[in-house]
Image (cartoon, rainbow, N blue to C red):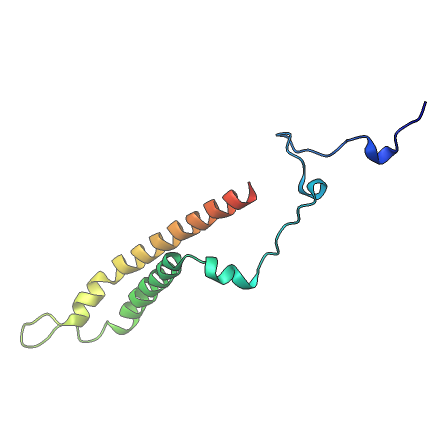
Length: 114
């Protein structure tokens, strides 16, 4: 009438779906940043971040620096007037792009966390 040692009972912790937890399977989580992680960055997302920041900064700069010399004496419309006219739309587009990028990053974070 021998009894099995307590480690051989076969119990393991599982999540609510019945999958074994990582510390029981011997798998380890990778570190948050690895040297090769920079290659995994999507270059299109980086360009979109720069584009959104550029739109907001450019629109704000047009407001601050474009208020002078809006009308020309010879009757032509100067470029500064056209830039100042479109500055609110550039800022709005930049803010919309920032919100979309934050939403995209939130979705990616949710996918990684399961």
